[in-house]
Image 1: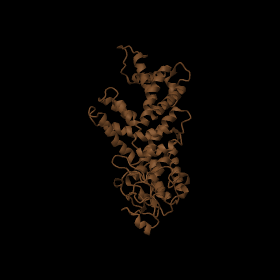
Image 2: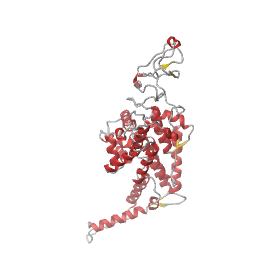
Image 3: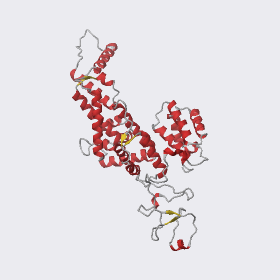
Image 4: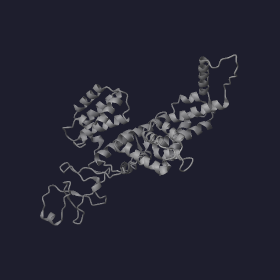
Length: 439
């Protein structure tokens, strides 16, 4: 189903580009196409094609003569200018444009949605186990703005081109998935979504405000975010299209309520805290058996009644008291898998119901690496501006007020609200009000 949906989406994007670029014309100048603000990869493909046409058809011919010095710098500069002018005036037939669209648009879309599978297809397109240094360098160039592709191509560049087979590439991809998406899944995923949105904005004149649910689903699956993928599957049947804000809210509350734990294989189950009056510690994920068990009920106070004495009540080592629904139920506590119909879900629309203060210092939450990143990328190395911003945030007693300050700062500095650094800072500010002191 996902495969068919992605193919339909490719056709839709190609059709939209054809309509904008060709528009019933029999031939179109490259200069005219450049005014349409097309995707970079498509423009690059057309420019390369224009240079090839210029080279093959040789519209400028210089007849060498001893009477003229063609090595003069002024002559060289003027000839270069003339070549550039002629490149702008290269005309493309509709068939040539369609070919460029199909090649570049498909590659751009596939890299954004399925970067690792697409990279493998590029590297192994000629022979099953043969690597090509040129293909790796091309991958490095076209994936410059996409972290997973950039990380993969940089790793490949330091290897012998013949040393990585499909199995090795798959293992390398798993390492990069963990590095890029395990530590900061929300900001990393939103960065990729923003990259995809820029691509869509370059295709549609009025932009695209939302993505098909299957497109988002495919992105989660490709990035090894299996727990998020399971949660998303529960939601996508109810919501066919998702904008960036929808995706951000899904990711954030999934982490917040689910208390996502990553194990070595970058796969885990999601569980959430019970009531605030219960002990806060839990068993490590590795100590909990994954098996379906009847839903546990809460015990108000560990006072044993006569009936409870006969029902063989157990207390887990983490201090949480549970009473099985049936006498034979296992005493060992299973982890609760997070579902979107859980009553403990924090609805971002009801954000005013945040836990009461006092709240921790924001500086105690932000580590040195993140702090330096924010100062460099958001505050342009202005440490005083950063400290003033933090001070203003810490004066606020609600997430809404703090978020308003952040939005104002980002707008003033003309920084995308969905860039990696902005999303990460937003996550940390949000955690200040909703973490209940747990970091």
